[in-house]
Image 1 (cartoon, rainbow over the protein chains, first blue to last red):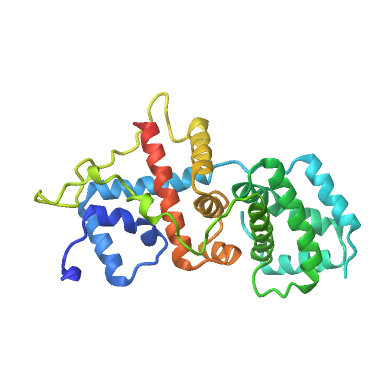
Image 2 (spheres, rainbow over the protein chains, first blue to last red):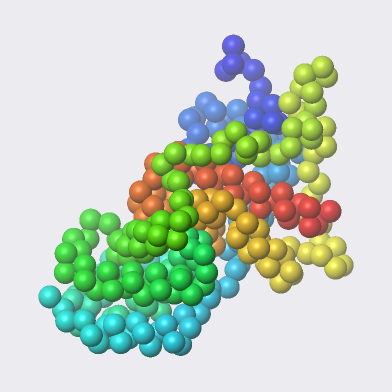
Length: 82
Length: 210
């Protein structure tokens, strides 16, 4: 019975995003959490996914170049509200 | 990037409809940089991305009279942006599949199969070569600008549908629903694309910190 069996690591790494998105059903979520309690490898893996997300979030916003900004303003001034 | 609260949003919509330039510049300031970054993932060059952003704003202005507030203004603006960018990508001969999750077969698992124990072992499917904690090294760290550049490069290397989703979610901080609505994709598609993207970015960082 699949439900009675513990998850393997190779399964857990594929469930990590669904886990973080809170998209797992209650039973499956519990199985992931139980696995993480005893599995250092998967805990580390989850931690690294979180670190990866954090780094992506640190990318600096790119400025709108001045020339584009001017074009946008010009487009706005040309536009007549309906 | 946080969407302005509803009252503020209402004011901006009204301002825009009334032709108030400060409402327009406020919105350009708020969303323009994200729009440019997202557009860049659809099209072949920075210059084309700028044209897409410009075209999208014209679309926003022409459509604002019909904006009904059923989604947030932010979601609505990004819907216009992504539709403009998709059209432009098609004209450039780039097709970006969102509905069909192509490439399932070539993708492989999140982690190379040979890092797990095989069926002939006592614990099949468990780590043989578990990931090692990422410790800062003197010359390589997650906090370095080098790591940021690496992430930016790796995102650019992803298939466009994955690059777009991870850029919106993790770089620009959209929530899942905003991305689904802007791109008109299912919850599952959004998640699968995000999963594949994050998986590859993690792998690249692991490689870098090894």
